[in-house]
Length: 489
Length: 112
Image (cartoon, rainbow over all chains, first blue to last red; front, side):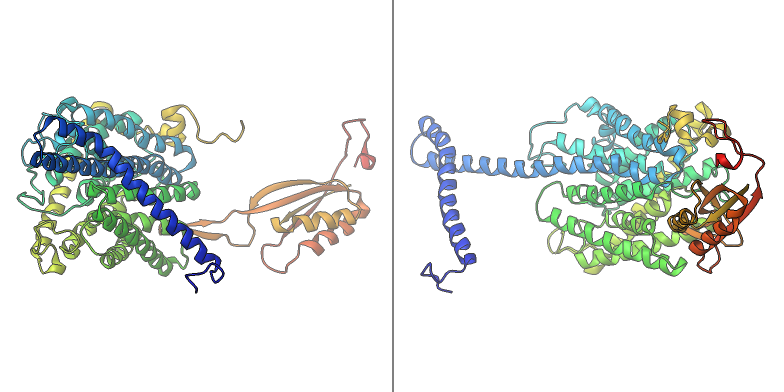
């Protein structure tokens, strides 16, 4: 290399030098730009304030304001993108994933269940769901101060209990996307056999009476399980208990209450299009970055940590499920790989902002094995028809993830209990596992009782199950009067 | 006149069709079919649930030929479709009473 002469330069060298020159020019321009932006405010300050000392103060104030505005821009951009990503998990992600797993006659009905949640829960959330989840209230449920989104500010408020760098409205809409996907996950358990009207009523009530209280207990101010001052400070970064245990356990209860599909397990009920499921699972994987990394509620290093953990656990979980399956029936199936990936995403959810990347590998691998065991063995032992394995994946994976969070949470990643204080088992704080067990137990209890009561009420009011004729004809024709696939038109 | 029906592995369709044309048989009807003989189906696994698929995809060729072409046609089909393994298929031969060309009402072998 001859840095001094052009003749001795390789083409690469030349590019570097040109870029260097450009960068210097850029820097000058940026400095100039900033001074131009700041000048008017300084000039104003000079006009109104007394000289010397005050000028420095106002200069500092202006700088501080500019820094805050910059952070708000960065955080808010990421949080809005995350919100959209989480919505994408329900539609089209979950709708395709579940839609491909049912028989051909039920594809539209199944996709409509997810889509209906996108619409219904949105309305409920604005009216009272958000208030019940994130209002002050008591330790179990929020209050009514945010009915119709009253007192949910659009301005950034550094004193806000939830978010200090983004508007609470952003937080509200981000949390809405979680409230949408959670009941939508349950639809996998009662696939192909519940009336559309019953589904809409049951899941609407469920959203208000099971989801909102659970979200409040874990994430709400003064919640029973809130890690910051709750009775049982349990760790749930992005919804292992709030989203996955509640939906998974409620799914099991619903499958048991409704009974099996006609012909189960003797009739062939194989997925009608694993291609759709494959696309859906990949959309879920991508959307989950918004779900987990977005749960940092800012775009700082914690979001990066959650992003990486999410990705890592998914990879090993897909591997774990595939290995289990290989020993079970000798072939690594596509459905196994994507099911494992979803199980890993579920299990890492509560842990994603607390653990180190190598721990994420372990959590993912464990989820792959445990969830495939639940689906392959436990389901057939007990004989329940959890049609699309909402319990086997979300209930089991969520429980496993919540417990392992207590084991692997490291203060080096997220010192939630204060700098220097141990967080989880790896830090020597094994008592955290007890708090995690409390969180899991409360989530299970609330889901079982709440779901049973709601199913009973809706069943008495309008009836839950399709008539045998309608079940035979399929959801598409019987509930919606149309067909997903018309090969004759 | 005879009707020859042959059930074949789908992968052998093109070879059989060419062999029949070479043997001087000009008309045939091809159907996509599902079925099984002594050949067993295969198993599929969906999240650990095992399904046995015993109806396998096949193609069926139907043709009506003058009596003297019978042996040539059968030789052509066997020559092109045989692999020697289970599932190669079967040939059925049956008499045909009459043949009518719809376009001009021709009857018998001239209608073939």
